Each structure stands twice: as structure tokens, then as C-alpha cells.
Length: 452
Image: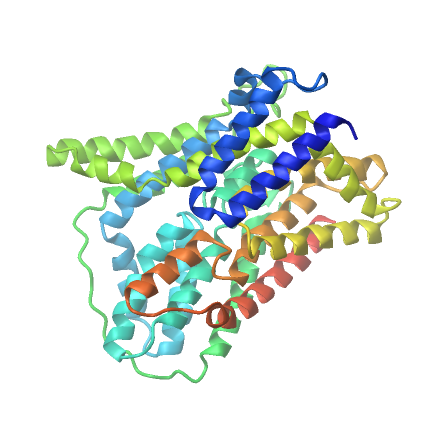
């Protein structure tokens, strides 16, 4: 191991230690670490390591960032239209007991979260649960925790469901439809839905004795349906362009789409929605509100991490970690591949319970690519999606083990805190652990059966 690799590895580990211990300033830590990587490469401190500002900018995935910004903006308009509340009211009108209300709201949150950011989903559905719980004079803690963990689970179902899915789509060269079927095999959508159904059964079992009658639900009026159409058109446009290959997959002479196509689509419909509201209201108030709602924290964090990951890759750290993990595979036999697959899934579950799954996934994706390559060089003959999907199962669902493992969980506990409910980690884990283990085991087995 040369000096530049040791330096990069130490800096990378320190970056994660500081991000974990000082979560409020994680974006600044990531950016500061990125600047150190660039500065070291720029000044030629190590003869075998170079990294310029231009190279750092090319490491940033602008397509991913535009998808995040555009989707968040359109989702804000969607929430403001009160359409999610209207949909929730219709669902509640069909159930008449607390246990079925919790199951239905959890599944409903999951369906929304397949296309909408997890935190936004919690903000949409949690108020409905709060209103019903207040009317029945029961604690809203359990229902809102179930809504939160369900939204985290379903974020892995589609390309636009969660930032981790967007990152995976880029790394594995997957488009919107590839989350449903890839090369004739079931994609992450079906794996996630199987986990969701299994977890819903666990939720029903936990609340099987809550038969309290709910009664009729208030029907929210929706005057502006355009944001709903914009969100739907965003999804349809992403589906449409998924049939057009990227340059890397195109045949000679075949038309291909630019790398930033998905990001441009998400931004386009967001801008259409904003421009329409400015013209309609003759005011920039809604535009300002929408821009404030964008999660710049995540955007800046990812920008920094993209540059950091580019730095450790140039220093050979990615290859080093990938080789070490691949070393667990032995001769590349089926059993040894199962061992490394198991390690990736369950280590991801454990780490994502304490580390935000976005930086973790961004770091692990290039490592998984190296591991796959090393295994295939040893004669394993595995499909890259085996380890990619295993990583997503572990990293996305693992955040539900603890209240700090996912942003949606933190948002849910914040809502409860405002209502006067302080939720201890043990109380959260009472629901999060059985839900997570059920969903992870289901996904873990299905991905192996489908892709090996």
C-alpha cells in the first residue's frame, strides 16, 4: 500500500467519523474533505496522485442532483395542492378500525414513497394519522412510526423513490423501467413490494387487538389538480426515455440520450409548475417557498461526497477495499459468492442503522462494482445486479432499525415531538426492528433467488 492510498484512507475514515458525530454540519465536513483531496492532488504532494478542480467537477453527478432538486420541487407543489390529504381521506373512508387504519396508512405511505421523497411522504401522511388519533384520543406514536418505516422501505421500489435508488440507477446503468424488469428478471420494485407485504402482515399482527371504531372521515377539497398531473407526467416521461439507451449502451449509429436526461426531465416539470404559479398568482411567493423546501443539505452533502469518492478512487482505496471484500469469495464458488453477498447485505443493514444511507450508498456503489469485477475474474460469473440490489436492500431498509438511521424517521419523531410525544429509541425499535428484519430477510432471499 503506497503513501497516497494510506493518506486517502485515513482522510476518508476521519471524514465519516466527523460526519457521524456532527450530523448537523455533515455537508460542510464533506465539502472540506473534498477540498483537501483536490488541494493535495493539485499541489502534487504525492507523486502518484493528482486531482484538479476540473476533474473534481466531472466527478459530481449533475444528473442525480437535478433529479433530486426537480422531484423535490414538484413534490412541494403536489403537497400544497392537498391532493395527498384527499387521497388519504378516501382510503380512510374504507376502513373502520384502528388496526386497519394503521395498515392502510402504512401501505399508502409506501405507495406514495415509491415516487416521492420519503421525508415528503411522512409530511403528507402523518397529519392524517394525527387527526384520527386526536379524535379517538389514542397515542399517535405507533401509527406515525409505522408510516415512517413503510415510506423508507418503498423508496427502493422505483428510480425516483429515494436518493439511494437514483444513485444505484446511475452506478448500475438502470433506467426507470429497469426497476421493474431487467433482462427478463424481476427488478427492485417486485422485491420491495414483497418485503412491503410481509412487513404489512407484521404491522397487522402487532395491532391485531386494536379494534376501536373510527367512523367517517372528513373529505379534503382539492382545487388545483395541475401539480398532480405534473408529478404524473414526470414519471411517465422517465418511463418513456427509459427505452432510449445511454451512449455507453447504444449500438454504433443508434440514437442515444444525454447522461443528464432524467435530471432535465425532473427540472423541466418543476419549472413548468413554478412558472404557472407565478403567472397565476402574479407573485413569486410560491416560487420562493418551493425553492426553500428543496433539501440543499442533501444536495451539498452529495456534491462533497462525489468529489471525496473520486479522490479515494484515484488514490486506489476503492480498489483496495474491493479486493479485500472479493478475497472473502475464495475460489468464486456459489457458496463463497453467497458469503460475500450476505456480508454486503447485513453489513449495510447494520451500518445504515447508524449512518445515513445516502453517503453510505454513494461510497459502497463503486466498491461493489470492484467486488463484482474481481469475483467474475475468479470465474464466479455473477450478474452485477446481484450485489447492487443486495446493497440497496440492506442500505435502504436498514435505516429502519433505529430512529437516527433515516431522515424520514427523524422527521416523524420531530412531528411527534411537536405534539408533546418524546419517543425513546427503545419505543421506536419496538416497531422498527420486527418491520426491518421481516422486510430485509424477504428482500435478501428474493434477490439471491432471482439474480444468482
